Amino acid sequence: MCKRMARSLAGIALVLVWSQVFAGSGNKTGGLSPSTLRELRASFRLDAPTRAILNAVTANDLRSLAINRQLLAPRDTLFAHVIKTHGITNQARSGRCWLFAGLNVIRHDVAKKLNLDNFEFSESYLFFWDKLEKANLFLESIIERRDRDVQDREVEWLLKHPIPDGGQWNMVVDLVHKYGLVPKEVMPESRHTSNTGTMNQLLAKLLRRDAARLRQMAREGKSLSDLRTAKEAMLKDVYRVLAICMGVPPTQFQWRYKDKDGNLSELKTYTPQQFYKEVVNFNLNDYVYLINCPTRPYDRLYQITFDRDLYDRPNMTFVNVSGEVLKECTLKMILDDRPVWFGCDVGQEDYTKRGIMSPGIYDYQALLGVDFSMTKAQRIQYHDSVPTHAMVFVGVDTLGGKPVKWLVENSWGTKVGDKGFLRMDDRWFDEYVYAAIIHKDYLPERVLDVLKTKPTVLPPWDPMYAVTVWE
Image (cartoon, rainbow, N blue to C red; front, side, top):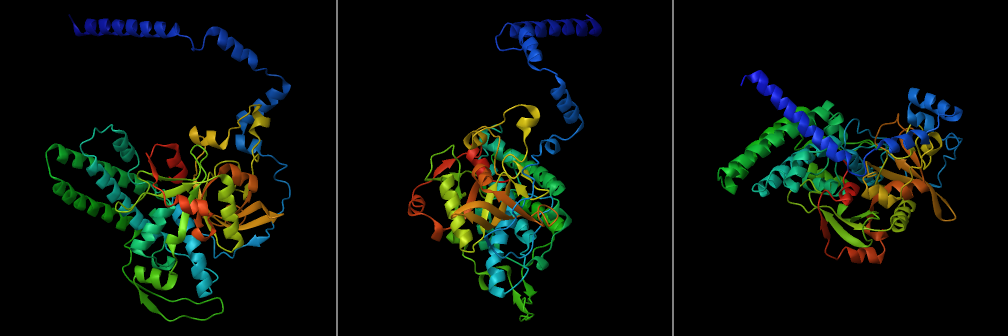
């Protein structure tokens, strides 16, 4: 039989097979039948108002057309209680919001203690170590699971998320405790700390290559000691990429400051760890992570696998509380002049151009004639809404002792929002704020008691993981 005839017969056979498949599937209920398609067409009436909307939407951006102009009317921008801030920061095109927000909380006490108008820690310094620690966590996790199938769910998750920018409060704590802190000018931003896309792509490729090599070594019968020796060599490549892209982190530096009264301090030499202990002296262990995740029982302690960046530190531990408890604790801290790190879904119903966070700011139902409403629990469980951004509460406006709106310090520079600040309606807090770091002095007794219990450990694909980690 000639090759051309063989290919023709094979093609005919394939057509017959697919025709049988489609014929079989056509007999199943649930498909889009001709009668269903006729009903769908009939349900859409292209009357004059609908035609006008269609013409507008097909030629314009949905968000700009759906803006609720009534909510953009002149708004009260005053706040009854505002905490002094010390300069708007800018994470640029990176996923470091968790780190910027964490350092912005810590710097509040430093600036107050040193009588400074403006102060900023080096985010690049801790980000360097965060990346290196995440690389080590990834490689160690691959070694631990070296005998599992590559399609094992945990192995697959690791390979999909080898070295993300995203992080959490526990990562701020662990990095500061291990590596200390340095002022911004000691290790400034580089092109690749402010725009991490290409660097992350190369680091991910490098780590996936290393994962393949480690698993091959395991198949060849290499010992755990051999794998860890190989890992050390692999981390040298990671360190080299980080150092070239970010700069080399300092082991010691000289620093002095001028306070807002014009007084110049003595020039001193510090290691990053000395700077943290002697100048900063901020007790990070006094803070507790609360989340509001209505898909799980409240007043319970949880952990998520891989929710850390240091291999030899615990996963993030947090208490799930009601929205009322989360808000009450946050309010107490703000009224006591203590800024609050929090996580929210900043992509939902916010008009960042004007710094407005208000439910209904985009009236898609009025524009499209479709109801998009879901409960907070439904949005979490069905992957419609997760925290996408960490920021800092620095003010609140109250009426009758109840919050009306919240002042938010962002890390997107001064050109976004109201010179870098956002104004959050209290209803937006209810719907889209998921987490806050609260000092233990402001926690109810029952929450403190929960901290003494054994946490429930959840896998990283659980919806609660998305409520605790920002990518």
